[in-house]
Length: 72
Image 1: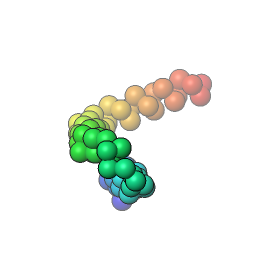
Image 2: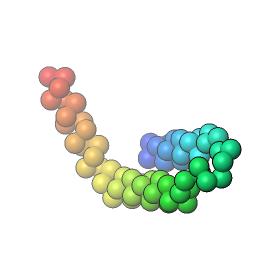
Image 3: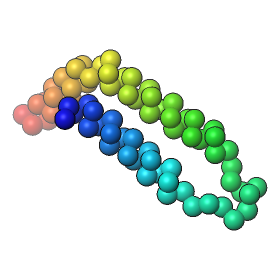
């Protein structure tokens, strides 16, 4: 499995876990703006995925360069 695909699957699993772990509120007025935070979460995930697709090589090179500078 490609590392980028594995990262996307891990990210989606984390989001699914986060969304499913929300306990229902006893008071309906205490729920907040559920569609708003879901939309922000999904938009953030889409932006991260798009950035990874476009700039994956540059990010990997930058990370490897930074690690080589730290390790000597």
